[in-house]
Every structure is written in structure tokens, then in C-alpha cells.
Length: 469
Image 1: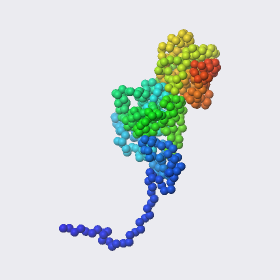
Image 2: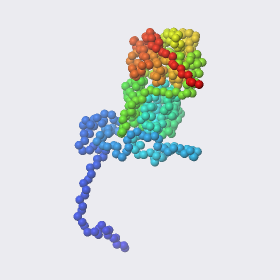
Image 3: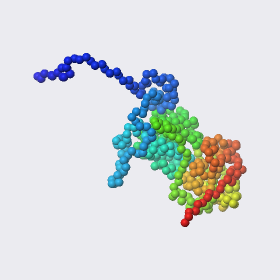
Image 4: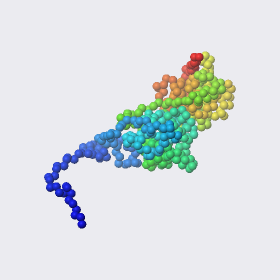
């Protein structure tokens, strides 16, 4: 039997133990340091805006005395870190799903919460989707290199042909409370297969819609919830939620997405508060040429017509807002305005009626006149091109008002009240090209037509530029 040998440390004679070094005071970032004021005013200030009480009821905000930066870099994210595509490879660079190529992303990217792919589920029609453009621009400014996709209704999808920041626009109506099971599961599969880092939703969510966002497998789920009992349990599936003052988000007017814009542009490490961008739309040359041929066949020339939009109709192509029920004017009122526009022979301007349905053509020819210029337009892209080539716009509170201001065209906006005008056109004081005429009785039908006639006299034909040969 082999005798165990004694180790060198055991064979060495016993020596006096060395004095151990003083322990370093290290405090975990989740525990308050000694002498901190986590229980006082500081904690109250830190917990003023909690993340989501459904996720962690014990989260009282960040520790003000802890250095969260450490070795991680702050600032905005950089462009897409993936390597360039190999031109010699017929398949290019394979875009592996999230988690399969972690060597391309640094740990700091995870800490900063970088967003490479974002999806926006936008509720409402044309008007609501037009006002969503600043949110898309904010995403591009706050997260450089992000790919933005949109899920909207069939009417809302048409808007994004004017937004160069959107990659894909999918048709799926988020306002449908009882969607077809096949469409529901198919849309979920589309969202899951794209591996989004962030998904935004503007539909007021209960448990059902919040679960739809949760099943998309996005890292961060952000959206609006009902301001009443219908939101119970929805926050359990959302990373961040906003509560509007009413059950109709469109009641907020132009700033209906204010809470979401503030959250996206929130300050971070070495990143200041991102300013809210203005509403801007872009139009393609191909669409502009198509619309130019269309209004030439309607009998008007470029820069020598005034767009009239907002005729009373039951068509879904009215492009009205859900936050303003009284925003369409009868034909009898428009006939007087059109007569005033065409009365000045020196300017040579012609009124051009934009109708949402062909059934209104006979009514306009009967009330206004058979020689009236009429154009049938249902898409917001064509309407924007028409406004861009016009001398000005006379419209009620429809998408035409917002599109005219986005393209910096002269505009006369008719509103049912001064409060509605301030709600939907808060920037009107900074725009000399926009004139607001509001009704004094709170009803659009009682709007002062004399004031409208005076305002339309300021329209001037747009200058035409001839290229030198």
C-alpha cells in the first residue's frame, strides 16, 4: 500500500499568518450604498416614472449613485454592424436570425438597447397614418440604420408610398376586433419571422391586442392601452405602455402620438433628448408624372388651379380624422367659394374639385356648373402630387390640410371651432402660408363664407420655370 506523501505546504514549518488586506467596499448596483437617500426625496424622484409596474412591482427606478456606464460606450447606435455582402457569392451574405451571429454585435449594443428592426402597428385611416410620419422619422433619427416596417389597414397602407423611411408596409387591420383566424396567425408568423427588436402599436390595447404584440416575439413591446378598466392585464405583456386621456386617441389632434414620441426620443447615456421632427412627405417622379397627366385631362394647367377638398360624402376615401366628426361641407357652400376663385380673370385660377367617389360628379355639375373641373382621387399619394402642383388648397379638416402644410403650399383651412383648429394645427402661427377660418357657432356649416372668400383672393398662380435649350 502506497503511503500518501505530504505536500510541500504541509511540510513547511508553520509561520505567522500574514495580515489579510482590508476588504474593498464594493456595493451591488441593486443594493443601496451606505448613507444613500433611497428612502427619501431621491427615491421619490427616481420612481416618478416607473417602467411598468406589471413587470416588476419592486422596481423603484435607477440608482442615482451607481455608475451605469462602466466599460460600455454611450451615445447612439452605429449603422448596421453586419459585414457587407460578398459580390462573389451568389447568395450574398446570409442574414442569420437574431442570436445566431452574436460575434457581430457587442455587449454594449445590448446594454444600450440598440434597435436594428422596428415594426409599427398603426391604427386608423389615412389621417392617422399621415400624422404618424414624425414617429417614423424619430425612429430613424434616434436609432441610425434601423429598418422600419409598418402594419396598417388597407387605406392606411396607401400613405406610406410617400414615406421613404419605411421598408415594408403590410395590410392588416389592427382595429378589427374579430379578425379571421387565418389572417391573424399569418400576420403573427410574418412578425415572428422578421425578428423585430421593437414593436410599436397605436391601437388602444386590452389583453387581446397586448397578447398579439407579445406573440410577435419582439424584444420590446410598446403601445397604448385603454384608459379604463378594459386595460386590465394588458401591461403584463407590454414593455412600456401609455394611457391617453380618452378612449379615442385621435382626440389628441396633431399631437396624438406625443407620449410615444417622448418615449422614443428620451435621453440616454451621452444622448440628449431627441427633438420632435416636423411632418414631411415625399413624392416620386413617376407618381407626379401620372397625376400631372391626370389633371391635364381634367382641364387645368400646372400652377393655375386651386384644390378644393372636403365635400360632404359617405365615402371611406374622405381622408377625415376620427377626432373630428364635423369636418365636411355641403356642395352649396363650395359652389360659392369656387365662384369667388374663378371670378378673378387676371389671375386665371380655376377651382378643381377633388371627389372621393364618381357618384358626386353629377351633383357637382348640377350645382356648380357643367364646365366645372373635377378630378376623382382616392389615394393620398395622388392627392399630395396634386397639391404640390397647385396654386393653393381650400379644405376642411381632412388630410389635405396636413399634406398642404407638409409641402409648404398656401392653404385655407375651414374648421368647426377655434379649439379644433388649435388642436389639429398647433403650428399655424409659425406658417404664414396657412389661413384658418373657424366657425363661431361650433358647427362647420355656419362657417363665415365671406372670410373664406377674402382668404382665397390671396392665392397667386405658381411660377412656371422654363428650361433653357
